[in-house]
Length: 340
Image 1 (cartoon, rainbow, N blue to C red):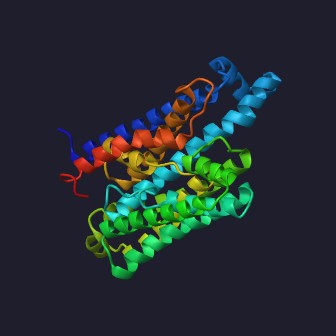
Image 2 (tube, rainbow, N blue to C red):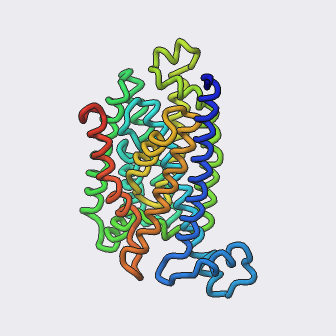
Image 3 (cartoon, helix red, strand yellow):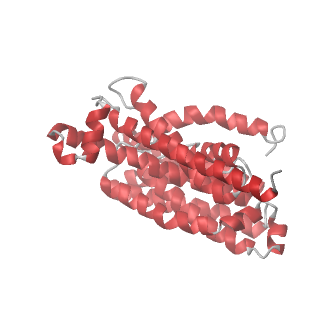
């Protein structure tokens, strides 16, 4: 007869095996992402170039190391950042529709990027201003909830209202912009990984490397928070301080994700829900699984963006939206008859 401890340990072993399996899938998608593009590369040539760089031809080395590998790795980093952000948002707001996209982070970053383009700033200025406005909207949503002691649903609605506000402000900027400026704004708002370089990848990866361990450190507190704010308080969890810290960290992660790549929607919604199906609500497993699922989905989207029409790379934000909209409706209708 199985004891409770044995059942618990067996379930945990299954979750660890899922992690290993997903990491293997992620590695395969990474290789496939590097292989695909206007010039398709054989898998043996890609692996040889990755693990024995000096032995590859100059042409292959440039394609793999200078063009495709940074883009493929950025897809993983951005997916991890958005997946983690979405899982923590859904936990602290007690709302299955909370994500960086639905709370308006992408819209605010888009407005910041548009403002920088109108002012004639370079790529560094565009990334900086989009980062600032992405951080700003997270803190506005947090302050609205804190001031009114609102529920998670109210904070999500506040985020959606701010999303429409920043979209309107961006449209206002576009109305008075030149044709060249409008073209740059539209391309940025589509969301793309193709302008990634090793410097941008390093900054985004560093922010993830600093923020995610700090998130995981409080995993058991987030699990207690699933019982409700009052019960978590009774268990000794400082709910207000925990939420403030969480909002700061997910603001960093969300802003780092969108400031270099533009608007990439629904990864922060899809990743956590897939993770919840796989490992449940235990935050020790749920948060890292959400990060991995976000990376897998975005890496898959990156591959599809290059395969839809040979020789043409579609903006990845379009692909994630096509994938995400049906998923969004599934989540809505599974949430208590359409009520979130």
